[in-house]
Length: 127
Figure 1 (cartoon, rainbow, N blue to C red):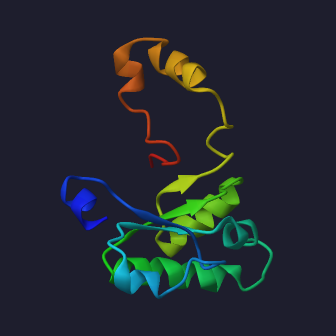
Figure 2: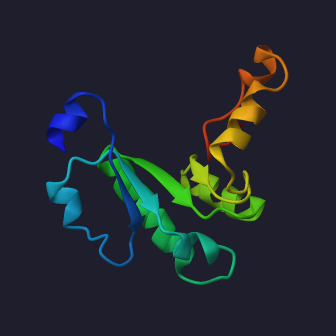
Figure 3: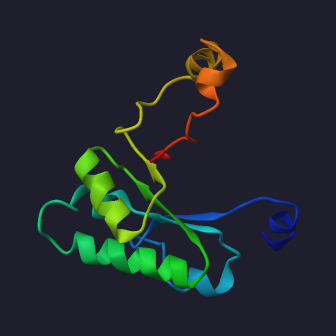
């Protein structure tokens, strides 16, 4: 992984905070990004412990110099909570449904190049 990272490959720890996504990986893996698990994103607006957990993951990522991505963002309310906590890269149905590579290519090829020059990266919101 370190050799791949030296040539520009980035690594993300998916589903951070659940299952096998352990804190111990932060010590041994050359990571660039933590992905907040959908289980925490889904419950952000329910008054549960999801918000302080998401905030902790974001703070941890920042302190380690890592990017943070929230997965499973389905509502603008979830996006707003995450933005307020310091997470600004998202993926989820709020931004688009799964599709084929050819359908995605068609969307990019439609219209003029200037119209598409401002498209965000997948899952990213442009303020």
